[in-house]
Amino acid sequence: MLLSDMAHRGPDDQGTWLSDSAILGHRRLEILDLTQCSRQPATCADQTHVLLYNGEIYNHETLTPAPCASDTLALCALLPALDPAQLRGMFSIAVWDIADEKLELHRDRFGIKPLYYSTLGSRFAFASYACSTASAAGASVLDGHALSSYLRFGSVLGPSTMFKDVEEVEPGTTLVWRDDAVASTRYWEFPSRPTRTTRSDVEESLRSSVRAHVLSDVPVAVFLSAGIDSTLITALASDLGLDVTALTIGFPGHPIDEAREAAHTAAQLGVPHQIVDIDEGDIDFDHFFQSMDQPSIDGLNTYLVAQAAKEAGFRVALTGLGADEIFAGYNLFRRLPMIALAAQVLPRGLTRKVLRKLANPAKADEAVAAGSDLPQLHEVMRSLWSSADVHAFTGRATSPVPISETARGLVNRLCCLELQRYTQNTLLRDADVYGMAHSVEIRTPFLDHVVLETALGYSQWARALPTKRLLKRMLAGRGLDQLLKRKKSGFVLPYADWLNGPLAHRVAQLSDGPLADVLGGPGTKQVLESPHSANTMQLWSLVVLDAWLRREQVARGPLVVSD
Image (cartoon, rainbow, N blue to C red; front, side, top):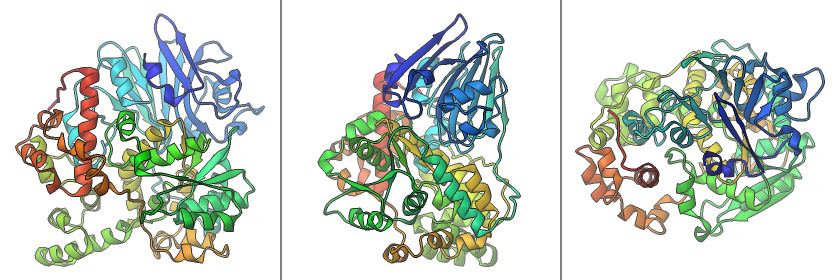
């Protein structure tokens, strides 16, 4: 039943491997080696290891004495001495040792590919979805602290999940289960003292990454917007003579429509271009909500571009995700240092006035309380609801966000915070879940450990000031002056219009469903009865959570929340 539930993740094939001690199942999306040779679960040549694998290993041809036809075959050939630190790519890997009855799980450095596990009862369950892991393990109790982190940030912070007895395997980690005991080790850490690099080093690392990420036996698209990041990916692919098609979603007649600018860019770069227009009536909101693994406020844009890729006939698409985090594209890379400085040198009252100019006025008081503590300031600026709101809704105080902060230097520290908090828990999780909702694998050339380590060794302030100068220089001389001068603007969907239009019935039902019981705090009734008192994204977060809870209530029965 679990394999059929995940058919969209791998519509081309499925396989199972059974023994007295283990049941292993796999769904396959055919991208490399379209033959049956790479089907899974794969019993390796030594006949003592079984491999389950999700993702792409871009350097797989260099890992074995003789190149293998696929990364699946290369991984099998490396066993039993598989070292994840050798791998360049995105992956979640499971290796079952038949003789020793030992399971090894490996997850990629950034957490691009998901991997969840549970040790509830006497079983060890793992899967690509938190919900599937919960079903396999019989886990049904919701995690109250995860619920609070969703309200605080619009996504659940790992390694916790919405289920009390399900956790993520953390990025850059190997987890071993044997004799009912679990042990984990990190094989990769965020670089604390990167080797000094030059601009040409950074540029070459990006070219190398784009070349690697186009590895495929099926056609590859690039999600092209009117922004710097996706344009650079497209330009580098063109420079390298790679066979890609630029793909843009259009919203005809709407201010967010970027189709015309993207078409000009593709023409200047000499890259084939397709536009898939989307009308409000084309959006299957119900399917979007059904596709959720864990609630997130940021996944609908990915859902739509993945839908466009599928309609255009692609199952692999490159995206510019990660460039803002590594190359300081967000305004917070400039605002947070100013806020921290103001907290150090100004009286609290004057600091509050400054913050109302530099940041969201509603966050000023929390930011003043954070002082010059950079991780705490980052938490406040990335928050959706205030800590007081979360306490009012749930009756629980928000816990400090744990962070493994090893980077040195202000810009690199912010890069680390962005990648570990926002990118990992929101953007990458959504890219996988909502890409796979349409059987589309989304790849992220900027989120490559070689690119990151090279970029961190380059001058921090040259990366941050002025914004993305390094990336813009790589686009110079291509007839894209208008794009290079264009003010940065995020791709913001018209949520307010939708919440008052096709989603109005979901807003109306917020007070008549599981939200009130699950949240349970003294402030819940007021916000559910007057939902439009919240801002647009806060209201959207309640609609998303309500939809997720209703679905889980149908699947699992009455919902119980842990303390």
